[in-house]
Image (cartoon, rainbow over all chains, first blue to last red):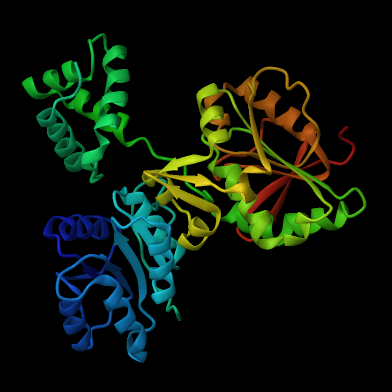
Amino acid sequence: MKVLVVDDSRAMRSLLRRILTRAGADEIQEAGDGREAVELLETGNVPDVALVDWNMPVMNGLELITTMRRRAEWRRVAIIMVTTESEQSQVVRALAAGAHEYLIKPFDEYSLIEKLEMLGFQAPASAGAGSGPALSGQKGIEP
Amino acid sequence: MSVAREEFVFVQQLVRQKSAIVLSDDKDYLVESRLGSLAHKLGMDDAGGLVCTLRSRRDPDLERQVVEALTTNETSWFRDRRPFDVLTNRVLPEMIKANSTTRRLRIWSAACASGQELYSIAMVLDEHFPELRQGWHVELLGTDLNEEMVRRASAGSFTTLEINRGLPASLMVRYFVHEGASWTAGPALRDRARFRSLNLAAPWEDLPRFDVIFLRNVLIYFDVTTKADILKRAARQLAPGGALFLGAAETPNGLCDDLAPVPVDGTVYYRAKKGEP
Protein backbone atom coordinates (compact mmCIF):
# COMPACT_ATOMS: atom_id res chain seq x y z
CA MET A 1 0.00 0.00 0.00
CA LYS A 2 1.43 3.35 -1.08
CA VAL A 3 0.07 6.33 0.82
CA LEU A 4 0.26 10.08 0.29
CA VAL A 5 -0.25 12.11 3.48
CA VAL A 6 -1.23 15.73 2.86
CA ASP A 7 -1.37 17.94 5.96
CA ASP A 8 0.22 21.26 6.84
CA SER A 9 0.88 20.08 10.40
CA ARG A 10 4.18 18.29 10.66
CA ALA A 11 3.04 16.70 13.92
CA MET A 12 -0.07 15.28 12.25
CA ARG A 13 1.94 13.98 9.29
CA SER A 14 4.33 12.34 11.70
CA LEU A 15 1.46 10.75 13.66
CA LEU A 16 -0.18 9.46 10.48
CA ARG A 17 3.15 8.11 9.30
CA ARG A 18 3.58 6.17 12.54
CA ILE A 19 0.10 4.67 12.30
CA LEU A 20 0.52 3.81 8.63
CA THR A 21 3.92 2.24 9.23
CA ARG A 22 2.45 0.03 11.94
CA ALA A 23 -0.38 -0.75 9.54
CA GLY A 24 2.14 -2.13 7.07
CA ALA A 25 2.20 0.65 4.49
CA ASP A 26 4.98 -0.01 1.96
CA GLU A 27 5.61 3.59 1.04
CA ILE A 28 4.53 6.87 2.59
CA GLN A 29 4.96 10.26 0.92
CA GLU A 30 4.26 13.55 2.66
CA ALA A 31 3.08 16.90 1.37
CA GLY A 32 2.51 20.10 3.37
CA ASP A 33 -0.28 21.43 1.16
CA GLY A 34 -2.33 20.64 -1.92
CA ARG A 35 0.16 22.17 -4.34
CA GLU A 36 3.02 20.07 -2.98
CA ALA A 37 0.79 17.03 -3.29
CA VAL A 38 0.07 17.80 -6.94
CA GLU A 39 3.81 18.21 -7.58
CA LEU A 40 4.45 14.78 -6.05
CA LEU A 41 1.65 13.24 -8.11
CA GLU A 42 3.08 14.85 -11.25
CA THR A 43 6.25 12.81 -10.81
CA GLY A 44 4.18 9.75 -11.74
CA ASN A 45 4.47 8.00 -8.39
CA VAL A 46 0.73 7.64 -7.86
CA PRO A 47 -0.31 6.31 -4.41
CA ASP A 48 -3.07 3.84 -3.64
CA VAL A 49 -4.47 6.08 -0.91
CA ALA A 50 -4.30 9.79 -0.11
CA LEU A 51 -5.05 11.12 3.37
CA VAL A 52 -5.99 14.75 2.84
CA ASP A 53 -6.45 17.55 5.39
CA TRP A 54 -9.01 20.23 4.51
CA ASN A 55 -7.48 23.49 5.74
CA MET A 56 -4.04 24.07 4.28
CA PRO A 57 -2.23 27.06 2.78
CA VAL A 58 -1.69 27.49 -0.97
CA MET A 59 -4.13 24.78 -2.04
CA ASN A 60 -6.67 23.34 0.38
CA GLY A 61 -7.81 19.75 0.56
CA LEU A 62 -11.08 20.24 -1.26
CA GLU A 63 -9.26 21.89 -4.19
CA LEU A 64 -6.74 19.07 -4.21
CA ILE A 65 -9.47 16.42 -4.34
CA THR A 66 -11.22 18.26 -7.16
CA THR A 67 -7.92 18.50 -9.05
CA MET A 68 -7.19 14.81 -8.53
CA ARG A 69 -10.61 13.79 -9.76
CA ARG A 70 -10.13 15.73 -13.01
CA ARG A 71 -7.04 13.75 -13.96
CA ALA A 72 -7.73 10.27 -15.32
CA GLU A 73 -4.44 8.83 -14.08
CA TRP A 74 -5.16 9.95 -10.48
CA ARG A 75 -8.76 8.84 -10.31
CA ARG A 76 -8.05 5.41 -8.92
CA VAL A 77 -6.48 6.90 -5.79
CA ALA A 78 -8.69 6.26 -2.76
CA ILE A 79 -9.08 9.51 -0.86
CA ILE A 80 -9.82 9.90 2.84
CA MET A 81 -10.32 13.42 4.10
CA VAL A 82 -8.81 13.75 7.58
CA THR A 83 -9.87 17.04 9.10
CA THR A 84 -11.22 18.99 12.06
CA GLU A 85 -14.07 20.21 9.83
CA SER A 86 -17.05 18.39 11.26
CA GLU A 87 -20.15 20.10 9.88
CA GLN A 88 -22.49 17.74 8.11
CA SER A 89 -22.57 19.96 5.03
CA GLN A 90 -18.77 19.81 4.79
CA VAL A 91 -18.75 16.03 4.88
CA VAL A 92 -21.30 16.08 2.06
CA ARG A 93 -19.16 18.55 0.08
CA ALA A 94 -16.03 16.43 0.46
CA LEU A 95 -17.83 13.27 -0.65
CA ALA A 96 -19.39 15.11 -3.58
CA ALA A 97 -15.96 16.41 -4.61
CA GLY A 98 -14.67 12.85 -4.75
CA ALA A 99 -13.46 11.82 -1.29
CA HIS A 100 -14.34 8.20 -0.55
CA GLU A 101 -14.24 8.53 3.19
CA TYR A 102 -14.09 11.16 5.88
CA LEU A 103 -12.32 11.01 9.23
CA ILE A 104 -12.91 13.75 11.78
CA LYS A 105 -10.07 14.82 14.05
CA PRO A 106 -9.60 13.82 16.83
CA PHE A 107 -9.49 10.17 15.84
CA ASP A 108 -7.86 7.07 17.20
CA GLU A 109 -5.66 4.84 15.09
CA TYR A 110 -8.30 2.13 14.83
CA SER A 111 -10.65 4.57 13.12
CA LEU A 112 -8.08 5.13 10.40
CA ILE A 113 -7.45 1.40 10.02
CA GLU A 114 -11.19 0.79 9.72
CA LYS A 115 -11.57 3.49 7.08
CA LEU A 116 -8.73 1.89 5.08
CA GLU A 117 -10.42 -1.49 5.43
CA MET A 118 -13.67 -0.02 4.16
CA LEU A 119 -11.82 1.00 1.03
CA GLY A 120 -10.56 -2.51 0.43
CA PHE A 121 -7.19 -2.46 2.15
CA GLN A 122 -7.58 -5.60 4.20
CA ALA A 123 -5.77 -6.29 7.41
CA PRO A 124 -4.27 -9.75 7.77
CA ALA A 125 -6.03 -12.05 10.24
CA SER A 126 -3.45 -11.36 12.92
CA ALA A 127 -3.96 -7.62 12.78
CA GLY A 128 -6.61 -5.04 12.12
CA ALA A 129 -8.74 -2.89 14.32
CA GLY A 130 -9.24 -5.62 16.87
CA SER A 131 -5.68 -6.48 17.75
CA GLY A 132 -3.27 -3.97 16.34
CA PRO A 133 -2.84 -2.57 12.91
CA ALA A 134 -1.29 -4.05 9.82
CA LEU A 135 -2.68 -3.65 6.35
CA SER A 136 -1.77 -4.91 2.95
CA GLY A 137 -3.26 -5.25 -0.46
CA GLN A 138 -4.79 -2.70 -2.70
CA LYS A 139 -7.99 -2.24 -4.53
CA GLY A 140 -8.36 0.31 -7.28
CA ILE A 141 -11.34 2.54 -6.80
CA GLU A 142 -13.26 4.51 -9.37
CA PRO A 143 -15.01 7.55 -8.00
CA MET B 1 -8.97 18.87 42.68
CA SER B 2 -9.44 18.92 38.96
CA VAL B 3 -6.78 18.14 36.39
CA ALA B 4 -4.59 21.18 35.78
CA ARG B 5 -3.49 22.12 32.29
CA GLU B 6 0.08 20.91 32.70
CA GLU B 7 -1.15 17.64 34.16
CA PHE B 8 -3.44 17.18 31.18
CA VAL B 9 -0.55 17.82 28.80
CA PHE B 10 1.55 15.25 30.67
CA VAL B 11 -1.21 12.64 30.32
CA GLN B 12 -1.72 13.61 26.69
CA GLN B 13 1.97 12.97 25.95
CA LEU B 14 2.00 9.72 27.89
CA VAL B 15 -1.00 8.33 26.00
CA ARG B 16 0.42 9.41 22.69
CA GLN B 17 3.78 7.89 23.47
CA LYS B 18 2.33 4.58 24.65
CA SER B 19 -0.59 4.12 22.29
CA ALA B 20 -0.32 6.63 19.43
CA ILE B 21 -3.79 7.78 20.35
CA VAL B 22 -4.19 11.51 20.32
CA LEU B 23 -6.22 13.02 23.13
CA SER B 24 -7.27 16.34 21.71
CA ASP B 25 -7.13 19.43 23.88
CA ASP B 26 -10.86 19.27 24.55
CA LYS B 27 -10.56 15.84 26.13
CA ASP B 28 -9.79 17.17 29.60
CA TYR B 29 -13.23 15.92 30.70
CA LEU B 30 -12.25 12.41 29.57
CA VAL B 31 -9.02 12.52 31.56
CA GLU B 32 -10.93 13.91 34.52
CA SER B 33 -13.67 11.29 34.49
CA ARG B 34 -11.77 8.16 33.57
CA LEU B 35 -8.73 8.88 35.70
CA GLY B 36 -11.06 9.96 38.50
CA SER B 37 -12.60 6.48 38.48
CA LEU B 38 -9.18 4.85 38.33
CA ALA B 39 -7.91 7.04 41.18
CA HIS B 40 -10.80 5.98 43.41
CA LYS B 41 -10.20 2.36 42.54
CA LEU B 42 -6.57 2.75 43.58
CA GLY B 43 -7.47 4.52 46.80
CA MET B 44 -6.30 7.96 45.69
CA ASP B 45 -8.27 11.16 46.09
CA ASP B 46 -8.87 12.19 42.51
CA ALA B 47 -7.49 12.38 38.98
CA GLY B 48 -5.15 15.26 39.90
CA GLY B 49 -3.60 13.22 42.69
CA LEU B 50 -3.16 10.26 40.38
CA VAL B 51 -1.34 12.35 37.78
CA CYS B 52 0.91 13.82 40.50
CA THR B 53 1.86 10.30 41.58
CA LEU B 54 2.50 9.39 37.98
CA ARG B 55 4.78 12.39 37.47
CA SER B 56 6.69 11.88 40.67
CA ARG B 57 7.98 8.41 39.90
CA ARG B 58 8.29 6.03 36.99
CA ASP B 59 5.66 3.34 37.46
CA PRO B 60 5.11 1.26 34.32
CA ASP B 61 2.14 -0.57 35.81
CA LEU B 62 0.37 2.63 36.74
CA GLU B 63 1.21 4.10 33.33
CA ARG B 64 -0.36 1.08 31.67
CA GLN B 65 -3.51 1.40 33.74
CA VAL B 66 -3.79 5.08 32.90
CA VAL B 67 -3.33 4.46 29.18
CA GLU B 68 -5.86 1.63 29.22
CA ALA B 69 -8.38 3.73 31.08
CA LEU B 70 -8.09 6.44 28.45
CA THR B 71 -7.97 4.28 25.35
CA THR B 72 -10.67 1.71 25.94
CA ASN B 73 -11.75 0.76 22.46
CA GLU B 74 -14.93 2.41 21.42
CA THR B 75 -17.42 -0.04 19.99
CA SER B 76 -17.30 -0.01 16.22
CA TRP B 77 -20.18 0.44 13.86
CA PHE B 78 -20.72 -2.69 11.75
CA ARG B 79 -18.19 -4.45 13.97
CA ASP B 80 -16.50 -7.33 12.14
CA ARG B 81 -18.47 -6.33 9.03
CA ARG B 82 -19.20 -9.90 7.80
CA PRO B 83 -22.19 -10.64 10.06
CA PHE B 84 -23.82 -7.50 8.67
CA ASP B 85 -23.10 -8.59 5.09
CA VAL B 86 -24.62 -12.01 5.80
CA LEU B 87 -27.57 -10.34 7.50
CA THR B 88 -28.08 -8.14 4.44
CA ASN B 89 -27.49 -10.67 1.68
CA ARG B 90 -28.84 -13.86 3.16
CA VAL B 91 -30.62 -13.80 6.51
CA LEU B 92 -32.94 -10.83 6.07
CA PRO B 93 -34.10 -11.70 2.53
CA GLU B 94 -34.99 -15.18 3.82
CA MET B 95 -36.74 -13.80 6.90
CA ILE B 96 -38.71 -11.25 4.92
CA LYS B 97 -39.90 -13.99 2.60
CA ALA B 98 -40.75 -16.34 5.47
CA ASN B 99 -42.58 -13.62 7.41
CA SER B 100 -44.45 -12.16 4.47
CA THR B 101 -47.79 -13.19 6.00
CA THR B 102 -47.23 -11.90 9.52
CA ARG B 103 -45.21 -8.94 8.22
CA ARG B 104 -43.36 -8.86 11.52
CA LEU B 105 -39.62 -8.83 12.14
CA ARG B 106 -37.94 -8.93 15.54
CA ILE B 107 -34.23 -8.42 16.08
CA TRP B 108 -32.36 -8.45 19.40
CA SER B 109 -28.93 -7.03 20.17
CA ALA B 110 -28.31 -8.89 23.41
CA ALA B 111 -25.32 -6.95 24.76
CA CYS B 112 -25.86 -3.65 23.09
CA ALA B 113 -23.45 -1.44 25.08
CA SER B 114 -23.91 2.10 23.76
CA GLY B 115 -26.09 0.95 20.87
CA GLN B 116 -23.79 0.89 17.84
CA GLU B 117 -24.71 -2.69 16.95
CA LEU B 118 -28.47 -2.15 17.01
CA TYR B 119 -28.24 1.16 15.16
CA SER B 120 -26.01 -0.54 12.57
CA ILE B 121 -28.75 -3.14 12.07
CA ALA B 122 -31.31 -0.33 11.79
CA MET B 123 -29.17 1.24 9.03
CA VAL B 124 -29.01 -2.09 7.17
CA LEU B 125 -32.80 -2.36 7.33
CA ASP B 126 -33.45 1.17 6.18
CA GLU B 127 -30.84 1.21 3.45
CA HIS B 128 -31.38 -2.24 1.93
CA PHE B 129 -34.97 -3.10 2.76
CA PRO B 130 -37.07 0.02 2.19
CA GLU B 131 -40.11 -2.21 1.68
CA LEU B 132 -40.16 -2.77 5.45
CA ARG B 133 -41.09 0.88 6.01
CA GLN B 134 -44.64 0.25 4.85
CA GLY B 135 -46.98 -2.23 6.51
CA TRP B 136 -44.31 -4.12 8.43
CA HIS B 137 -43.94 -4.23 12.18
CA VAL B 138 -40.21 -4.12 12.84
CA GLU B 139 -39.00 -4.37 16.43
CA LEU B 140 -35.36 -3.74 17.23
CA LEU B 141 -34.45 -4.37 20.86
CA GLY B 142 -31.11 -3.63 22.48
CA THR B 143 -30.42 -4.84 26.01
CA ASP B 144 -27.50 -4.38 28.34
CA LEU B 145 -26.80 -5.08 31.97
CA ASN B 146 -25.45 -1.60 32.48
CA GLU B 147 -28.19 1.01 33.04
CA GLU B 148 -25.86 3.82 32.02
CA MET B 149 -25.20 2.09 28.70
CA VAL B 150 -28.95 1.65 28.17
CA ARG B 151 -29.46 5.34 28.82
CA ARG B 152 -26.67 6.27 26.41
CA ALA B 153 -27.93 3.91 23.73
CA SER B 154 -31.46 5.31 24.04
CA ALA B 155 -30.14 8.85 23.70
CA GLY B 156 -28.41 7.76 20.49
CA SER B 157 -25.79 10.48 20.87
CA PHE B 158 -22.17 9.77 20.00
CA THR B 159 -18.87 11.61 20.29
CA THR B 160 -16.59 12.25 17.34
CA LEU B 161 -14.30 9.44 18.48
CA GLU B 162 -17.26 7.07 18.55
CA ILE B 163 -18.77 8.16 15.25
CA ASN B 164 -15.39 7.74 13.50
CA ARG B 165 -15.22 4.03 14.35
CA GLY B 166 -16.20 2.06 11.29
CA LEU B 167 -19.15 4.13 10.15
CA PRO B 168 -19.00 4.96 6.43
CA ALA B 169 -19.18 8.73 5.93
CA SER B 170 -22.13 8.39 3.56
CA LEU B 171 -24.17 6.68 6.30
CA MET B 172 -22.99 9.15 8.91
CA VAL B 173 -24.42 12.11 7.02
CA ARG B 174 -27.54 10.23 6.05
CA TYR B 175 -28.56 8.83 9.43
CA PHE B 176 -27.02 11.16 12.01
CA VAL B 177 -27.46 14.78 12.92
CA HIS B 178 -24.44 16.79 13.97
CA GLU B 179 -25.13 18.92 17.04
CA GLY B 180 -22.27 20.67 18.80
CA ALA B 181 -19.69 18.05 19.68
CA SER B 182 -21.96 15.08 19.14
CA TRP B 183 -23.70 13.11 16.42
CA THR B 184 -27.21 11.96 17.21
CA ALA B 185 -29.08 9.14 15.52
CA GLY B 186 -31.92 10.50 13.42
CA PRO B 187 -35.57 9.37 13.40
CA ALA B 188 -35.02 6.61 10.80
CA LEU B 189 -32.92 4.83 13.44
CA ARG B 190 -34.40 5.95 16.72
CA ASP B 191 -38.02 5.33 15.78
CA ARG B 192 -37.29 1.64 15.38
CA ALA B 193 -34.77 0.95 18.11
CA ARG B 194 -35.64 0.60 21.77
CA PHE B 195 -33.39 -0.29 24.64
CA ARG B 196 -33.83 -1.76 28.11
CA SER B 197 -31.66 -3.25 30.80
CA LEU B 198 -31.39 -7.01 31.03
CA ASN B 199 -29.07 -9.37 32.86
CA LEU B 200 -28.26 -12.21 30.47
CA ALA B 201 -27.37 -14.46 33.40
CA ALA B 202 -30.80 -13.97 35.06
CA PRO B 203 -34.18 -15.13 33.68
CA TRP B 204 -35.25 -13.27 30.54
CA GLU B 205 -38.71 -12.07 31.34
CA ASP B 206 -41.17 -10.68 28.81
CA LEU B 207 -38.97 -11.37 25.82
CA PRO B 208 -40.64 -12.50 22.59
CA ARG B 209 -39.01 -14.86 20.13
CA PHE B 210 -36.66 -13.16 17.70
CA ASP B 211 -35.94 -13.69 14.03
CA VAL B 212 -32.36 -12.53 14.56
CA ILE B 213 -30.28 -12.43 17.72
CA PHE B 214 -26.87 -10.78 17.95
CA LEU B 215 -25.12 -12.21 21.02
CA ARG B 216 -21.59 -11.14 20.27
CA ASN B 217 -18.48 -10.70 22.37
CA VAL B 218 -20.28 -11.02 25.68
CA LEU B 219 -20.05 -14.73 26.57
CA ILE B 220 -16.41 -14.17 27.47
CA TYR B 221 -17.55 -12.49 30.67
CA PHE B 222 -19.36 -15.59 31.98
CA ASP B 223 -18.22 -18.91 33.44
CA VAL B 224 -18.71 -22.08 31.41
CA THR B 225 -21.98 -23.12 33.09
CA THR B 226 -23.54 -19.70 32.56
CA LYS B 227 -22.28 -19.57 28.96
CA ALA B 228 -23.96 -22.90 28.24
CA ASP B 229 -27.17 -21.79 29.90
CA ILE B 230 -27.27 -18.50 27.95
CA LEU B 231 -26.65 -20.29 24.64
CA LYS B 232 -29.40 -22.83 25.38
CA ARG B 233 -31.85 -20.07 26.20
CA ALA B 234 -30.79 -18.07 23.13
CA ALA B 235 -31.59 -21.13 20.97
CA ARG B 236 -35.06 -21.28 22.55
CA GLN B 237 -35.53 -17.55 22.02
CA LEU B 238 -35.13 -17.89 18.25
CA ALA B 239 -38.27 -17.86 16.11
CA PRO B 240 -38.53 -20.78 13.65
CA GLY B 241 -35.76 -20.36 11.10
CA GLY B 242 -34.23 -17.57 13.19
CA ALA B 243 -30.53 -16.71 13.08
CA LEU B 244 -28.12 -16.32 15.99
CA PHE B 245 -24.86 -14.45 15.49
CA LEU B 246 -22.00 -14.94 17.96
CA GLY B 247 -18.70 -13.06 18.11
CA ALA B 248 -16.06 -13.91 15.53
CA ALA B 249 -14.05 -15.90 18.06
CA GLU B 250 -17.01 -17.50 19.84
CA THR B 251 -18.55 -20.92 19.32
CA PRO B 252 -21.24 -23.01 21.03
CA ASN B 253 -19.12 -26.14 20.47
CA GLY B 254 -18.83 -28.11 23.68
CA LEU B 255 -21.29 -25.83 25.41
CA CYS B 256 -24.64 -26.23 23.71
CA ASP B 257 -26.00 -28.92 21.37
CA ASP B 258 -29.15 -27.03 20.45
CA LEU B 259 -27.54 -24.89 17.77
CA ALA B 260 -26.59 -25.84 14.22
CA PRO B 261 -23.95 -23.82 12.39
CA VAL B 262 -24.74 -22.27 9.01
CA PRO B 263 -21.43 -21.43 7.32
CA VAL B 264 -21.71 -18.67 4.75
CA ASP B 265 -19.28 -16.29 3.07
CA GLY B 266 -16.40 -16.90 5.44
CA THR B 267 -18.42 -16.55 8.60
CA VAL B 268 -20.98 -18.60 10.45
CA TYR B 269 -24.31 -18.05 12.11
CA TYR B 270 -26.48 -20.52 14.01
CA ARG B 271 -30.00 -21.85 13.86
CA ALA B 272 -31.88 -23.77 16.53
CA LYS B 273 -31.79 -27.46 15.70
CA LYS B 274 -35.07 -28.86 14.54
CA GLY B 275 -37.08 -30.43 17.34
CA GLU B 276 -36.03 -27.73 19.78
CA PRO B 277 -39.02 -25.96 21.28
